[in-house]
Structures are given as C-alpha cells and as structure tokens.
Length: 167
Image 1 (cartoon, one colour):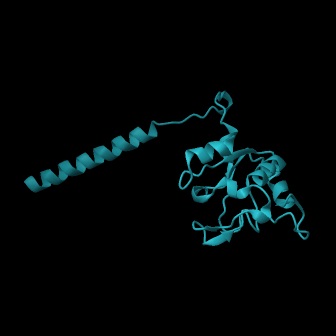
Image 2 (cartoon, helix red, strand yellow):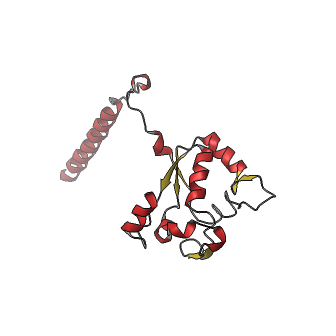
Image 3 (cartoon, rainbow, N blue to C red):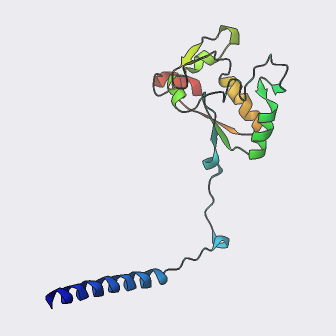
C-alpha cells in the first residue's frame, strides 16, 4: 500500500506541475506596437569592415591604379564602389581586426614604390606591399559615401603612433 501511495503522490505532483506550467505559459502574451517606437537605432551599428584577409583588399576591391582591365578610380574597383553605395554603408573600418595589430600607418603613405613590404602573419603569411594605405582608404570611403573608421594598432604600435595617425 505504501508503494502505491508513493507512486500516486509522485504522479499527482508531476501532473500538477505540468498543468501549472501549461497554464502559466498560456497566460503569457506579447504585444508589439511598432508604430509607437520612439528609439532610433544608430545607423553606425550597421557598419562594415575591410580587412587584409584573403583577397579582400589586394585583388579584391583594390586592383591598383595601373590596372587597365578592370574599371577603377584610384585603384578601387568601380563595381565594388557601386555595390557598396547601394548598400548605403554608414562606416567602413580598416585596416581590419587582427591585421591592425601589426599595421603601421606610416608604411602606407608616400610614394607606393618606396613603401616597405610586410608579411601578413594573421592571414596566410602573404607579403603585403602597402600600396593600399591611409589616403587610399579615405578616398574609397569618400567614393562610397561612408565615414572612415580607422582601427588602431594596439598590438605592436604605440600611443604616439596612433595619435600621429589621427592628426
């Protein structure tokens, strides 16, 4: 008799729990009043980034000024410019994420033939020639109508280097 009483009590408790949970869930409703929204989401939350990974930069949107086969403005492919304009990119971050930690902006200014090369240890160990530099990035942002977002080198750079870059 004790065994049946124990089983009955357990079954009753489980049944009561299930009924309670079902009742609790059945009473919940959600109302979405989209027309009453007062908060505006900042458009910069939808920004994009351009990083030196794979062929995103070189051979991607940047083909160089001497390329006569692919329509470009200052080395930036016009088909990419047109596509990014259609997306209405609010801001564009460069030189990326991990790559920024080894990028030194002074290597990407001045005559392109005199710029030092570097090995991109983050993405495949390819040699970067720094032909796409700060001015190229700022010009590209202007072409697509995006605000530039410069990612600082906080890995191998210095505070002094970063402050000189933004001045």
